[in-house]
Length: 336
Ligand code: EPU
Image: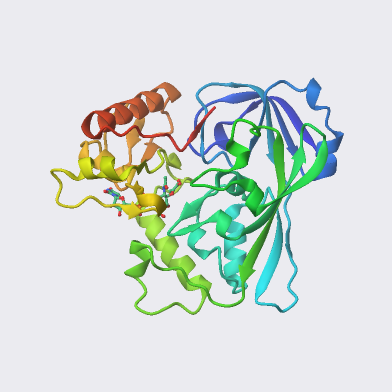
């Protein structure tokens, strides 16, 4: 069923709590709904959102916001070690993780408590604690706005990278509306607990995915603001990936610099550390502030921050890090 509204307020529908509206808002719950829509007659451009937990709306949106309510979780469990799951794009990501852990399936547990929907997770390739969505995705089904037909991509065709996929790249952006995602989870235990914060919790391998989920929830609650309580869009910046020489330069004058080695000699450095070294923990512009416990996150404490203030703080952080380290931070949050 389609729900359509003009001049719709998005204030309660973006986790950053920006007070914005869109010219037109549409909710749909099937591919048939999408096929029945006359997209050309809608205010343009079109923007698909999940829970808008990774978007900074900088002003009212002049086009049409599309929100999937395609909600199903289907198991194809034939008793094999690998269990395929077909999931509707509108399902809340953490509902999927919770259910899979309850059903003792491994693979999604490290991605517990991440805000957003299943469709958005497949666009963004969400990641945490050593696991990315691509590790458990087998394929993605979409509605192609160009052909107005259903189409599908295998995981290899999605070009997944760090918080990246073909669905974010210029050529395809806005062309495909993700309607469902096929996951492959495991009946056989495959705990991934190498990430620092998890390693220190488990002295021996956990036997249930729910144990990992509970540990991840505890870590996240201790570091990250709960989107229900404090406005934010999670990590505001990506962790920069540096060339070996650049990393060596950056290390000069520091006893240790936290980092992760990547293939090809590249080094990923936590943006949180760079921001902290610039003395910006807790820094603010108007109602926008750098979160004390995790400076990679910009928060809207009072719910009254204006987009200009968030942008000014973003700019201040980028300039400070560039000046001190010669590294240009890239926002992880999409600006609309
Ligand atoms: N750090 C500091 N100061 C701080 C906090 C962290 O120096 O105040 C340094 C520490 O060295 C720490 C390192 O940053 O070891 C990494 O911190 P953390 O484990 O919190 O992870 P992150 O690299 O800052 C990334 C993701 C998060 C994800 C965590 C856990 C990105 C942009 N962010 O953050 O994802 O939850 O790893 O895996 O890759 C998100 O995308 O919205 C998000 C929250």
